[in-house]
Image (cartoon, rainbow, N blue to C red):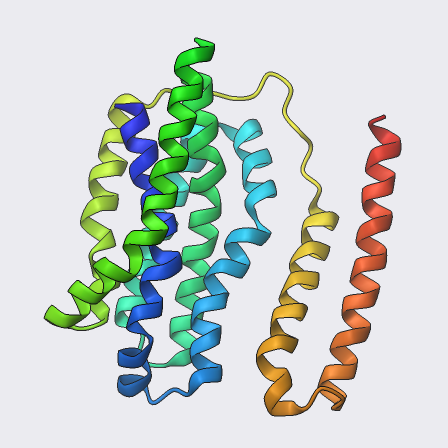
Length: 246
């Protein structure tokens, strides 16, 4: 049951990475958005999801995996509802960011819950294999399921469909998933996390806005400087962590 709960959550995380791609033409027509704006609707989710994975995992080790997992489900549901109700680009991107925050709490924490519950090495390897296969399946199923939903009732149903699934998973989590923590939790590296988000976010912003603003415009040059500084400071932070933990 715990494996099914965790696999369902990771299926939703992977599904919303690709399902929105099929909905982009419908979103663009209804909200009157161009390609550049639609790129932000896609990348806002994946950027936040990737940028917060490490911190969410460390937070779960300290605060409790089930607690963080449940919070991730709630945030993912709020983000999904926000996307479904979005009247324009700003609201849609903000809701996708909330989805990404919730997804970052589901992806690593779900795997940690499975690993902590399954102690036999052979069964643990099988469980991890199932977990990885479900995530791969979700990436492939996104365009197919998205196309079916959009054809029926429009692109907003792509996000509404998450809510009943999350409600069931949340209820099952309360009933079946025990609380667990790491015996040796990692410390939260907030400066490194912030630098990583700035670094990745600025790179994505240049790739999206560069063709419109110009690769050598004031915006682009400023972004290049921010990327270089963030990379230098991030490397320095990593070296200090390595010195503290040989």
